[in-house]
Length: 265
Ligand SMILES: NC(=O)c1ccc[n+]([C@@H]2O[C@H](COP(=O)([O-])OP(=O)(O)OC[C@H]3O[C@@H](n4cnc5c(N)ncnc54)[C@H](OP(=O)(O)O)[C@@H]3O)[C@@H](O)[C@H]2O)c1
Image (cartoon, rainbow, N blue to C red; front, side, top):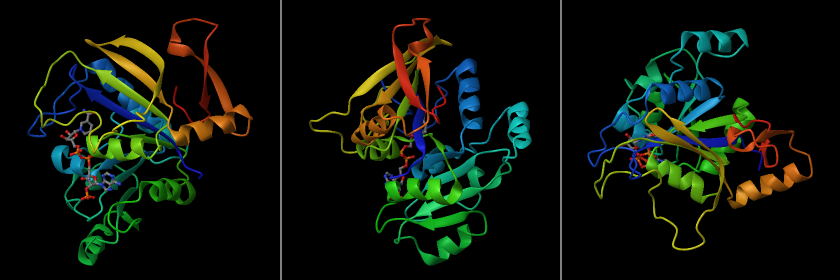
């Protein structure tokens, strides 16, 4: 399947929580990490979130730095990447920041379950694409993003349920996690990855980098999912356009990690 290069970026507490048990947004990142996130967003063709995050946090997902928006415009792009919501039942509020703040296109991915009148209302603010019968079929969505919207690099910004679906379906190439210096706790507080969880055959990761940042640490992982392994084969045989980067930016010359041409690393 031709899909974009997909990476998840998230911030979690030292105990692995991404918000509180009331699903209240917590500022986990420091200033440097927020800059890093803004730069990643500006370098992406599209940003994807689940409807849970839209309802809980009401994020705009715009590029914050004016100079980055200007650079995008200079390169002939919209100021902000395409903003995409996985929202099977078309519950995205019409006054949501993601639909209203900042220039650029929006896409709401719904399933066949979405009520027609909600879809019609959303179409005034965004493109609406139907993928899947019950839930948004994420593989179909990714293919659509690549083929119909020309998305080569997709940044996923949560939340826990969407992360699980993408990871468990082998659709994620890399995972960047800022681990902040706090404990949130709470058995019902969302973690980086929720969903059903793996019973065995756990998803394996390869460490790409560790970097102290702000008062915490940034971890960069490559996902060794089935999908990613197929991707690897392509790289091995040189049909996927590739660059070589140093592992972890530690200045070592002996260990190299391969990335697809669309990796932001
Ligand atoms: N710290 C961070 O980096 C960070 C980042 C983002 C979010 N968050 C936090 O994460 C929490 C939200 O996470 P969440 O798990 O509740 O919501 P979520 O992952 O943002 O969204 C999940 C919802 O997306 C919809 N969806 C549609 N198709 C799907 C599919 N194939 N697989 C999975 N979901 C699909 C489902 O609702 P429908 O069935 O209605 O479609 C599902 O309930 C909030 O508390 C927020 O603050 C933290």
